[in-house]
Length: 129
Image 1 (cartoon, helix red, strand yellow):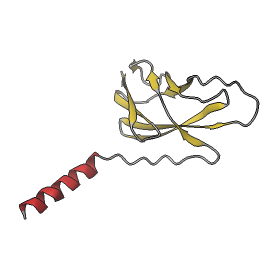
Image 2: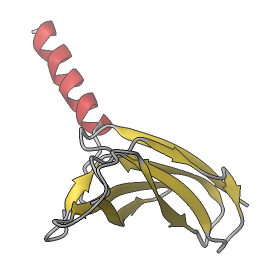
Image 3: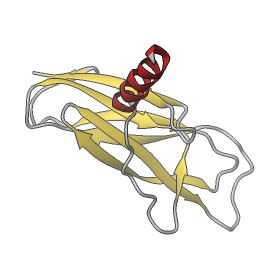
Image 4: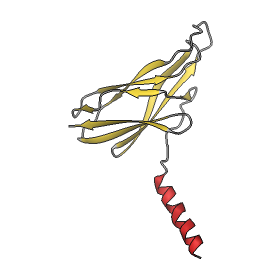
């Protein structure tokens, strides 16, 4: 009986620790992986803060076109979406950078969670004064 109670408590605790990602893939695009996130760690209310998001490519035809975000209080879940074009492009498989813009109309410490294709995250922390 004690073992069943322990397992039940463990199951309940793991459910609270799981984040639900509600960002659906736009038609014609696919969820793109993210290698690195860099940018300022502070800003002011209503100031636009630019965050550099580095993503991998297999050729010059690979493009991240947009970011979708889902705000949960001071936590923002973000996915990068893009496509590969069919046409003449370079064969260079080098990482590219796309700018993500963040702003808030309230003070506090925010965590931007950039969701990778394996559902792990790269976290970026911003304090808004």
